[in-house]
Image (cartoon, rainbow, N blue to C red; front, side):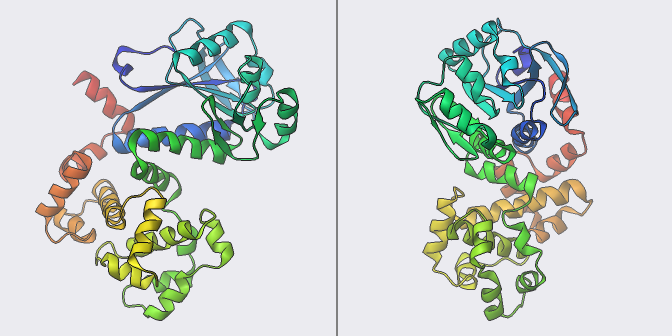
Length: 357
């Protein structure tokens, strides 16, 4: 992977794709890193590569511009093998030797869809756990009986991070970001791409009404208790559903704040149970997550409106623009005014100005 001098301090991802690769799963893996760069400053760099370079056709006939894979190049931080119908296209002696060499040197391997078959061809599937697209799990297990092929969306194994699908690739990327930047950063990236956790519940009129200030508390608690199906839809556990409901209440009270004890009372649970649920979700304390949501709304208002600073502060629960400015800068390393000015510059042009400025 060719690395320019101004990218050497970035985390490098080489996305090596084969003909007829799964475009949706590949972009699902890459997009969280794009958003992380946008939200937290440039941290990740990636290159789409193929054996011969040039335009590479995906399984849906879309074409991706790629650069040629260089076996002599130094290894990236992550090598992502994206294959679908033709993993054998990457089973070339020089390429497989490069994969083995990079893995020994510390490159973290990632596979998407059928990419694990390439590792098998490289002689690396001798132990551990992996996953592939559901259609190919049985054949992978028969070819490599010493490994455990799991029926999961993605698997974290010391050898490889393997992703069976687009949703698995997305979750895998978020896990990498969490390891690098923390669980709160992961949630902010996820929320940016998909909306806050549990957004589907908030669209229901009964619940939306229950979240409005002044709503009857008994009705609110009733509406906020999901059915078993609703709870499982929010991540498969009561804890995940509780966190989603708590965040909806927070989002409904960004201007007129509610205390965490009051939040727990409205959810009809003990405050300690609420705190445990947030901790289990990797979000830290509820109060910290509440502040994240308030400042996230502030970012939106700063870049998408021309509201005066004092009105932005009030809309996000701050009583003064001075206090808001201090908290915002401590959180993001940039003043609200600086964020507003930066937001007017196209994303990719920001880094160009940083290089030439």
